[in-house]
Length: 400
Ligand SMILES: Cc1ncc(COP(=O)(O)O)c(C=O)c1O
Image (cartoon, rainbow, N blue to C red; front, side, top):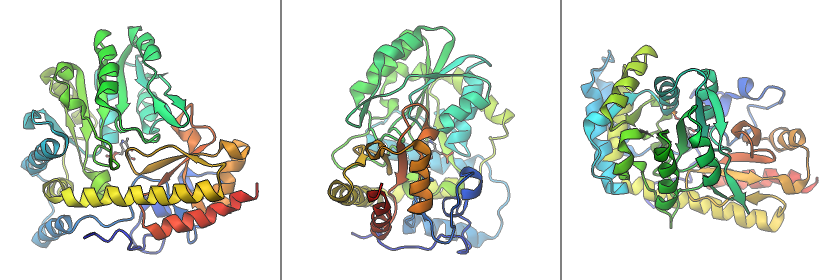
């Protein structure tokens, strides 16, 4: 291994790094007593690993210049070009065009803007719960109607409910469907056939497809990611969101690319970006993203192997010491979906036992919508020593 993912880097309160993941509990966990100096933070989706050296070098070089004024659009162009080459090299998608790609300071802002650009107040937008909660936020905060096509689950393996999707898509009030691919929090990497079936339904009923592929490169060994971009036949109704932020730990540099092959849709989204004041780029994010996409292949390969190792390690321990807790198989992302229903605890008691008694901060299952009850999500992009600490702390659940 050439990257040291075992190294524990201090991020807690007082380290001066101002990490939301390690300090930002107050607003998000009302009613919970969390000791900031002791808590083991496994919620927000950023990593406790350093990014790759080439990214640090590119940033250091730019910092040396000393002037950090407003960047021009050409600052984003290297990011676009490196992303296109990455899509081809890593996912086999060679058709992506540079002028299809809009810069946006994040995937979540792009979700909000897309909902606002492509639907009217009151229109229905389809999601598949349990799902990353800002999907719901983007719809409801924008005054649209949340329409749930809940995932089916069998032994913690999740699939899409196509029959229900067809029923929902048939309703002319439902104009847009948002897909999470790979799916946070259930860890599925959707196959080409699964995506095709879902997109066919959307196309049949004139529903637009917004595909959030921010976790596209966090694919566990043995699985293969399929970008929605590969489906030329849906390009006229497709909006794709990508970022280098999850994969290379750059989320604080707030940069994403939204790819819209259809010119009319792209113009509508670009206008919405302007209305939401999202059009201006930032100096460092695109630079870092470009360096990562240009040089990050080995980093990603080692990273995903390391995360899979964390997962195997934790699953072996749980099977032996806490078999009432089950884990959804991790095909993609570094976010692990754990089922605590076997403990027979009330929902609130479960959360309090894990967060306050065990001192582990994870995302509450109910945040992810229907299907999240009795679950919690934990971020496994952390050194093995933290996974060991996580398991030691979980032992409090042996005394239920
Ligand atoms: C599916 C998904 N989309 C978007 C984001 C956040 O994107 P951004 O930080 O670019 O707004 C996350 C972060 O956890 C995520 O899991």
